[in-house]
Image (tube, rainbow, N blue to C red):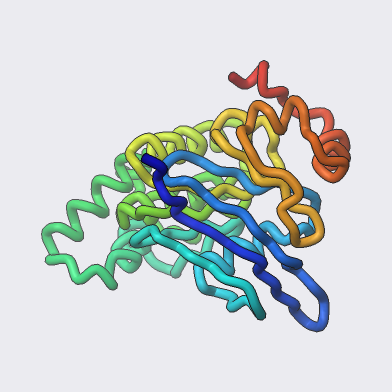
Length: 238
């Protein structure tokens, strides 16, 4: 029995300030696991995430998102000037949880990302890596069916990057569908089972990560992957 995709975009088009950003974008994201969106700067990757999360409305085409609750972790975290615990609790406010369950979820999420001892500290004083872990704690606490990640480790050191990758992998293994935008092809090789290559607002190639990273078929995908060298090869990362 074929499982329908969690996300499907068909001929999605979007222009911003008179410039075409998405130009007939068509691809699907299967349920569960990690799918990565890769491609050069300006290809439309971050805009695609915002369209999927309904932060932007396409000019035409169809978008189908079958997942339930979603969470979005941006490249630059958006934190309020409050404690780490309050930042997580605020994300849970729309769920209408009782005080006890809300407190349990906050404590569990902070513990999972290694920030239990910083629960009362001001989130805005955290390091970049700690802030990104806090953002993932908020997502973890929501228990989303769909997790959207926009360059979640772009400015992090290797240790913080490894912590974030472990958290993402654990969420995917627990059943969350993850759509990841990343220029770190080693990270893509480690986390993603499937890759969609964007160029000029179109999906020029999509398929299993191993096949695309090792033997891209289209000239656009080959040009992008060649231009991103050096990067950790799939064989080295697996």
